Amino acid sequence: MPQSLSKVYVHISFSTKNRENLIDDHIQERLFNYLGGICHGLKCNPIQIGGYYDHVHLLCLLSRKITQADLLQELKRESSKWMKTLGDKYKNFYWQDGYGIFSVNPSEIDVVIEYIKHQKQHHTNKTFKDELKAFLKKYDIEYDEKYLWD
Image (cartoon, rainbow, N blue to C red):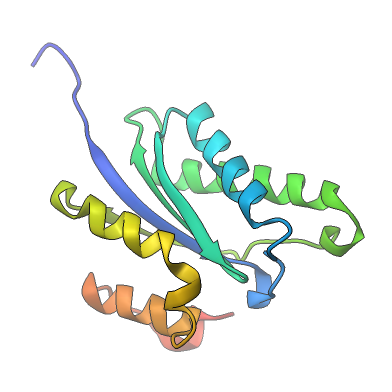
C-alpha cells in the first residue's frame, strides 16, 4: 500500500496521585480543555474529555505518529506542570504512575462520549476503583490487585 492509513480510537483514564480529590469544580473545565490542547498538539484529535474529582477520561483518535506511552507521558507531564501554576492548592499536584488505555470500536464512539459526559452522575454510586475493575474485566485484562492501586 503506497500510503499509511490509521483510525484508532482510544479511551484513556488515569487518576490523581493517591486518588486525591484535586480536580474540583473550579479547575475541571480548564483542565479538560488543557488536556484537549495537548492532544491537538500531538495530532491526537480529542473527541470527549471529562472526569471526576480524582480522575480523568479522554476519548481521542490516536495519531499514527505517536505511541500510546508517549501520548500518556506528554498528557500527564504537561498537565501536571500546568496544574502546579494555578495556586497553592495545586502546587503538589501529581498524576498516578499508571493509566488505562483501551481501544474503542467506531460503532461505540457515541456510547463512550455519553459515558464520559456523565461522570458526575456515574460516580454517585461507583468509585474509580470499581470503574477501573469493570474496564479490566470488559477488556479481559489480567492484573494483580495488590499492584493496581499503589
